[in-house]
Image (cartoon, rainbow, N blue to C red; front, side, top):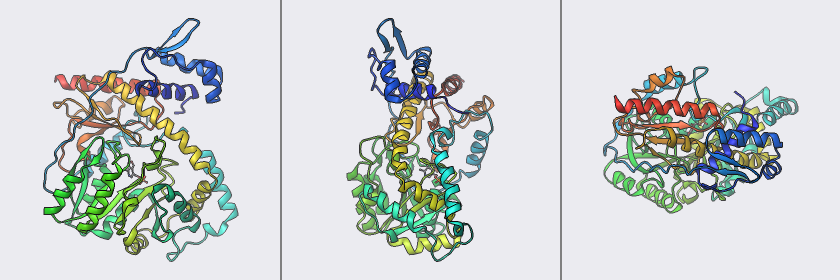
Length: 474
Ligand SMILES: Cc1ncc(COP(=O)(O)O)c(C=O)c1O
């Protein structure tokens, strides 16, 4: 489904209204100004404003322009919750697969898996680069080595990018992987054995929990503040008494909460884990998408002991289909590289070079600027829609980074129990119980905001709201 330019602009403006950047009663920039600033035709801008008018967000005043119509209802944010204090085995895979398969059927509104819309990705540039690289470097298609698995041009680009991560990191810290998920799995296999315990955020990204499950590891859920992320105090207490082998977390744009840990917490976590001999596996896949003026540093920036393994990929920023990620593995690098050799060997050499050339061209930074704005607008538009259609006592997260939205419904609503009804209506979401080994968060859900906020998405949120409101009454 292709999103039209006017729908994209309407989504962005709706986001600004939801976020309070354009306040109630305020005049929107004029049609001519929007057309000039956004390099869009006047008719596209007018169409976008009409759509906002239809959605009740703005009103046209004769001879004067468009004005924001009403204040967005302010919803409380989810509160810090207390998970069980002991580690437990994970058993979510079967439910997760069923939910993902159902959400992936054609025609289902894409509010489940955290995937970006095609039209936000620089696919034409990547197509050109694939053709060019294959033509200019035919040898890349013909051979691959277990001895030199990583494209040095790509590693050089990552080292350059690491200047913005509080770096620079050394080239020989990196291992290029097939995706972030592979990087996380390699790191876990390097520092754990079946039966070991890993500290995770609560709520935690379900694929991380699934990795623990398949590797026979136990999850120790650490309370996680919806604003400031994993509680370092709670981690301190938990690692005093129990044998924890690793701490696995998303420090910038946690999935599902969207929170960013303050630098001081990152520093304390890095020092604490090094002093306790607990390896840190950090997933920074959303760091580049932070909409603020400065990219937040990862925990790795505060690592003096080589104890932090920093993992990421280009799945959320360029395309999930590239399947290229990396880990800067500190002192664990040789062991992680060995795991990579025996798991999948080298990552596709053509794709590595395509990425290297894309990064080198400077196009990535330009693309990121547009993408951050789009994601921010989409998340805000989704918050607005949820606040309008979901039951009154709903709590809505205020993500600082990324493009997922965590929503907490009144206690009596069971989002897994209602999932079948939603799917029957061609609506997907990720039920909250999948974000925890202990099954807490049964009244929560995560929504994907990776798509421009079109009328079809707005309608999907409205229909979800009806299902949850009816679920509350039953
Ligand atoms: C925190 C986090 N890590 C990793 C991934 C998966 O990344 P990849 O496709 O590179 O494996 C996701 C995707 O949703 C994610 O949210």
